[in-house]
Image 1: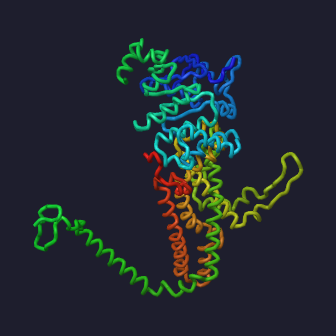
Image 2 (image 1 turned 30 degrees about the vertical axis):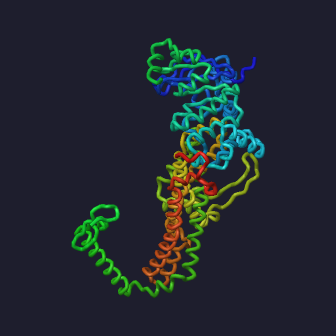
Image 3 (image 1 turned 60 degrees about the horizontal axis):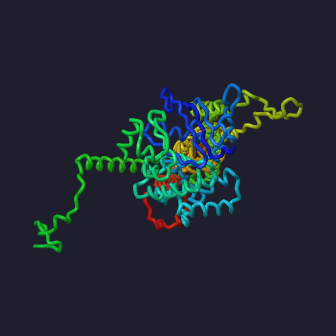
Length: 255
Length: 310
């Protein structure tokens, strides 16, 4: 069975010091699925996303991304940490878009997009430049290749960040509140790029407060609170008709 | 009277429009007092300095460009440049070691920095000069074989070598802390972005962390250069004929102590002033928000079709 682009988590637990931020979370995301995670701040949704990409390690539980145990290999008795090279390799298959864009300010938009293929995969520069050109065009930024991040608006920066992640040709794209740091006018341009990506069959996990995006694009929706998944299911169904009291009260406030 | 804006123009006795009158800074009595005291002091000192024959300004003038002094100055410049270059390189290595996730490596750098920052440079210099007392023979060879050569440490550690080693090793500890501070100023998000692309540790350092740490490292390094220039005077105790020692060599012969110390001081002052200007420029350059833009970026016009927010 092809497991590329799938995420499987069972009973994952994560604590920061004494504070348990993920309490036995289960998660199954199929290839090509677009899943939105919503919830109040501090509910553990960002931490869950960061675990899926290996920025945080889980304390216990099973976490398979693209069909492989993420960051560890399993033996009879324990999970052993993989070496850095293997972990980096796994990460190249998972794209991540951050709330604060995190573009490299010392590189142009084009160099940012080329950074992954050239520096990590050792791609030939000419080919990487052509690919970067196409990717920037696909996010509506052709002609912006020579600009430095500081010369771009927030929305433009975030689109470059999406192109940078896509340059690694990942199977899964993770978005951590991609529009939260943007002014309202620029939110649409980033969401349009994400919608386009979803229509191309990319597996996407999106932590967001954009209910409109969830309703329109997401296949499934997860509502998290206090480190637990409170409710999950079809996105439109939950948004229209939430079953849990907690979900109802949250949606009442944000919609 | 009505002016062009239709407002009534008020005129005072002097005929000046009150709206156009300058607003003056308040000068306190203390300010006038301070001016008077400082001017008197300056005049007094100048008078004393210029009339006291013991300053022997003609001697100062004679020796200012004396061959021995200039040679000493050159050696001082050499020591400054060499110890800064090697110190910075070693400091970079130490800073990288210090931020390593491997405990023994980070701890080694930590111990080094503590030792070299925690003891006086003067003591360190004398220590390296006398290292032969600890290790009289340095044996270089391949372990578990007979191939080796022994070097006499006393011959190896000439005063100038000791000076260079001492200044370099000490400077490295300070530079390590400056560079590490620069690393720490690079946002966590940048490192996460590099991680999420799967960059290796060395790649992350070279392409993401170091270029972004530069704006905070460079001005601080400029300061270190200025400090180092004066610090080199300490190696005169080892008998290295740098600027101060050159002056001492002359006055040991002529007994014109003060004039020669003035010669040396003037040279230190001149060099420090010369270095201060580029240092101030560097600081200005890197304190601007636009310092985030590499120099190449200026070619790009700052108006994009969609306009520039933030």
